[in-house]
Picture 1 (cartoon, helix red, strand yellow):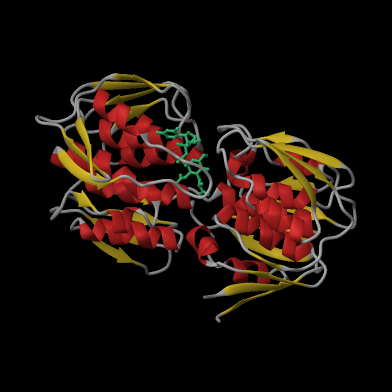
Picture 2 (tube, protein in one colour):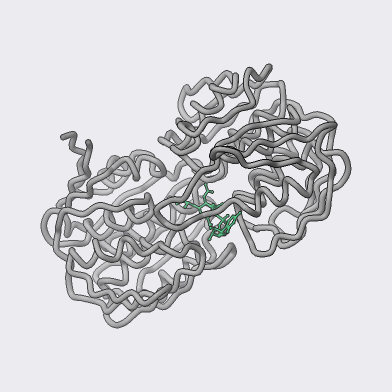
Length: 420
Ligand code: EPZ
């Protein structure tokens, strides 16, 4: 299995082009199921998760063509199956979101329940409740959701009890072809939600209010094919910004929508790193100044994203003082803490809070994590640490970061991928 080997202590210097957003791309891929014409996605990241989604779509009868470059063509002319098996869904839980589009188009589907994951139990009750409100009959049997909507789904008023990105997206994917209007209250407002709505609207859907708490979806009879560019990945951009803030140096991020990281920039600046923005790029610089402590809690967008919590923690392990980080979204998202401690960090976890007392330096070690953002935080810590860090279980990074070793290597990091 591959590992990432880093000789730390070298400030970063250079440019990094941000790829298309993983968490948007995989939902946009599911959109193809709603239409018998081809959907072309550009600015697609090449990741293990997009490959897994491609495999699942192919098993349903979708023609999937990848490349050249960051292009993917998906054509669901005729679907040969409405069953998403456990073997494919377990590889990537977001693939559960094919249930809604299959129900919308074929009026039936059998999709494996995704099961728990390393960062929490992550149930899908909100997804299923919303689909039931749209008129689906749902039965759970032997680990599968068996759903049927005789005569098709019907628009309805849905109020989510709390904000869920996945449930909001899933309901959108089902409601676009339902009869009548659907109103979503307490909807998630992430940029990925807007991206999904923009793509669906370009295909002929009638969605208004995406990016606000109340969204309206007027069902249409059919959608048509389009070419659509995936939004740049705000989490990848934030990860590299935090890597520069942690290791020091000067990194210009290209192909970034800085407004999608409104909760990050003031924190990075408060921690002593200079951030300069222009229309399409962000320059992140920490040239010899110390890292200052910051307190933060994760929240739904536009709050500070849980997907950057681990990377921010890596930065403040080296701060000049005490920081407190509170994780509000997932109940078990501090698995990077013991690994950072092995590198010399001083962290105490109490329930949903981590108290980080800054240390003067980190030391390289063999480390591993059980999810991709935690793995990215270990890479960041490794870049700043003295000596050699080996990040094992690289397949987590491959799920969500395109060519992380190459992108950081181009900025002068002494980083390589080694096959064992
Ligand atoms: C999405 O997960 C992202 N994944 C996550 O990124 C991200 O951390 C998360 O949103 C929050 O921003 C994808 O987009 C593929 P939620 P999702 O539904 O949709 C609970 C990464 O590293 N919940 O907003 O699954 C849930 O357990 C990943 O790229 C229910 O209880 O997140 C969590 O505590 C990790 N019942 C909270 O809600 C439900 O039916 C928010 O989850 C649904 C969710």
